[in-house]
Length: 216
Figure 1 (cartoon, helix red, strand yellow):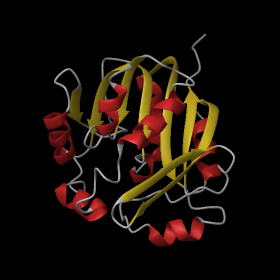
Figure 2 (figure 1 turned 60 degrees about the vertical axis):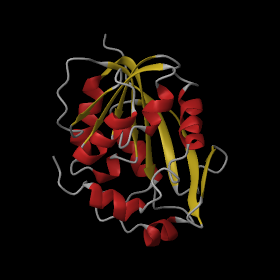
Figure 3 (figure 1 turned 180 degrees about the vertical axis):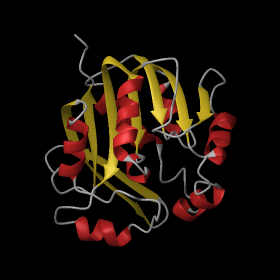
């Protein structure tokens, strides 16, 4: 697996504030948006990190998680229910027997080396009619310069606009909706996470919801 995503990566990206920067209300807001399109079924969370989203989603979905980081998977396994399988793997090279009703991919695709390969892999892992929910930072709009200035993550290979992401997703899926995400960590204590459709053209991040077409 990629040696970039070790404990040192998480420490440098989040400091001692990982859980403060990933509070429960963040994941519940993501779930609420997803449940407008699907409310039950099998779920694969790609890039599950410490498993905090899986912890919330498991009340509604049959969950499985995967992450490229050995460290993150170990952390997730130490806290999640034994019924939730979490394993090490990288999107773009996931070869699984099962197909899923819902695949989530939060702040992952910007890290990939080959976006097309990653999206093809996700398309293959989704059931026909399955839902994809992803979030990515975006670097366009009036705040794009600020997002770029504040982003010091050297593993971000795709620093692109919301239109780029919508176009790439629409090559393989039917885009159902997208919403903006306002997010910022204040004073090393408070994490702002607000989903907004009305301001989605100017937010520093977006959530895209899409559906895999059914084979004829």
